[in-house]
Length: 439
Image (cartoon, rainbow, N blue to C red; front, side, top):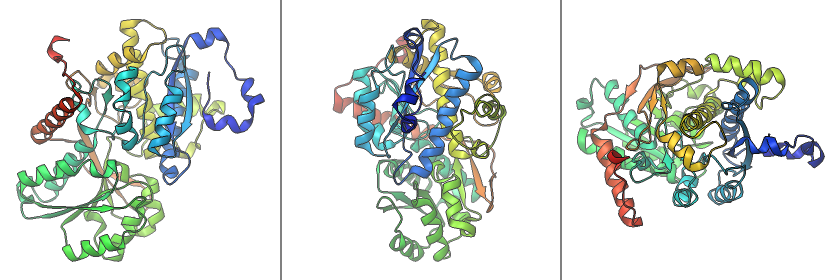
């Protein structure tokens, strides 16, 4: 079995003692791990990678692999850089007896850079809660899977929630909503949805960009103070998020009217802001900071054997859970594909079939120990996203509390936008969409 790249510091001799036999390698499924444990966003990248790898370890140590096929994995450090992400992709795509099963870019910028490579190499990309939102349309984007949610879904959820806050979406008319966003692919991705929904519901929308890494926002918040918006939606990452919370406090903007999206709503986003973060709200990517049965299994089978990458106290935090869920859907897609192609290491093309036929119903989620964390998920040729649900949480100064019930996005605006954008992409690239009804 392969181990995360960070163990290279132990020395080549130590790693040599862990080398698997040729027979073991032949029966391994290789899953690359693009991680960023260094750089500006390390505080976010480390817990995600820990949760992802811990779940792979759980499947190996508790279950003996996926139906007897052990998972091999290797971390490659991207520092959240698109160029390094592409380098990692090229380095890892051919590893393992059948090549990489799939990639999780863990960056919208890396996702855009790899979207044209994946079809050529026949390796699927899974982007849980980020990436290209139009890749929901699997008739065009055969190799992209924005499972559980996308930037566009998150924008729709934000407006659904704010509509509830004011007593109905019809009462959003005349309200002022500002999007404070990182001036990067991830930050710009939701703008189209907010504009479309503004035209439908009558609110005034203003997008205000923040130059990466987003630590300096004084001028933007002075502009916000002058505008006096009803709500500010925060689409940031890393240090931009606590900086925004602190600047909001400096201009006396109420934190309970500052709504972050899912990647602006984890422990590293609020703890640095101290008491000024109290009452701050964010969307959830379905899960929050919580523990279910899967966490106890990880503590028993992984941490109990000294194989965990985090501390036991960090198991169940938000970004840890996001990495865990990302690994879980990957494992279940492989398991789904094995039912068709056999219990053996599968190619990326076979795993793509498993992703497109992934069906995690309530019973399966219960069996996996994550029933409290995510809603049932069902992908298809037409729908590579699988679910469009979310919740809202609020920081009380010490912990996150879920303050809403489940919210589902209204697809009457999002679905046509996805189709329009996917069709434009297909036309520009000379792609003929598949007829999903004939597959």
